[in-house]
Image (tube, rainbow over all chains, first blue to last red; front, side, top):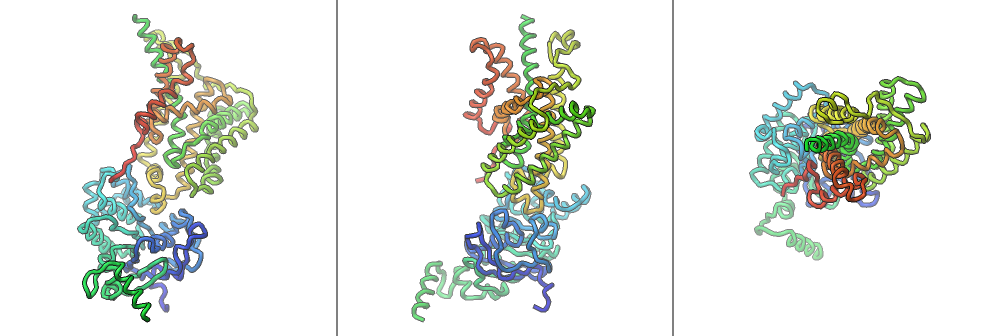
Length: 271
Length: 302
């Protein structure tokens, strides 16, 4: 590409193995342009989380390794970085399953996100107030123990906590997992706001294909560790295959996954 | 009647104060348990190692008391540093059981090093505070309470307050509590685990040194200190492995009950029941309240 600095993240043909044996990603390439939201879609076990962890370098703590290909963040290879160094460089991952610090209060959880930054008490409070403008709900619950907040609130805590690190780029791993539709919309609204107002680039892994694409600029669909399809969010939403396989909508009405597979194998055989 | 009541009081107060010495040892365990979720079997060896080094500095090199204490504390920070670098970091992704076994090994290494460096004979440690009743209290309240016990109680109280402030109000304290809850999530937001481990092991080392000084002054600085640390086990079972106040209160409970049981029930068993009575108490706690009095209940939303 002529202008590589237009991409904050550039993953080229990575292969990832766990325990030096289990091949989790075969060949994944993707780009996140600066200031954009990119959705990484796929079913359970497709390799979404692995891809995000490869980027945030959290793979090592799960005995995973990038065995081939390269990852460039902000123009530099991320080969030898540790997760805390990546946070220092402005790349923060929000892990799957929220992972709040249950015994800490909501506010302590959020403040802990600023750990890597050298801020005075006053600066922290100022940042906190700014964060609360996005997460109004959390301000009301600032003194409660995080473990006793609802799933949606915990997801907000996790994102707010990540925002306290002042990221240039956020990696969101299934932010809407197990949440009611209304909350899903609320979370995505916040994500969009953070993207537009704070200029944070976002790579998000989701199973909720429809909502994710509607809130993204670009999308990648991965299956068994390979990118199957990519394109602008709009084009994917209109793609027949995506509609059938991931949105459950086809010209003939609703269909389940097995029907689609059966149909595909029939057409393959007839070819 | 009054005499009997006074005697009972004396037993209880003496037991409570002696219990603070258990609390001090237990405190070291709690610190490490919070950060690594591991029972540190080398804590007893750390007590022995640190106080023997302290005595060695004073008696073999004629270093003044305060300076020797600071040197011994620094030495424990170095031990913490080495532990983080050579034991914990290579085992970063290993299971908790593996780390547990590693702490047993570390214990033997420390015991060996301590004896290789400073010899095996029992040393006397004089803190300048005698292990005999304070005359003023004996005269006015008619209670015979050891000055060393009172001193240990004060030191324990100060350490608790210090640690509480450290955890509650400092940045690194917040980091530690975050790691204690979810080490993976903590590292995902840039809390460097190795700094936290270093802090915790150093703090546990200094706590071990203080506990060692108290016990050393009472019983002599000797190898038996290693086993004495095991008394912390019932303290932790009662107080809760992850709770600092629990370690303190557990220590007090163990201290008081073992003395009361020894005095009033001991004769029926031929005496010396304080050696095993705390463990019986611990068994009851394991049966009916396994998280201890103050242990953090595992909070799980369903």
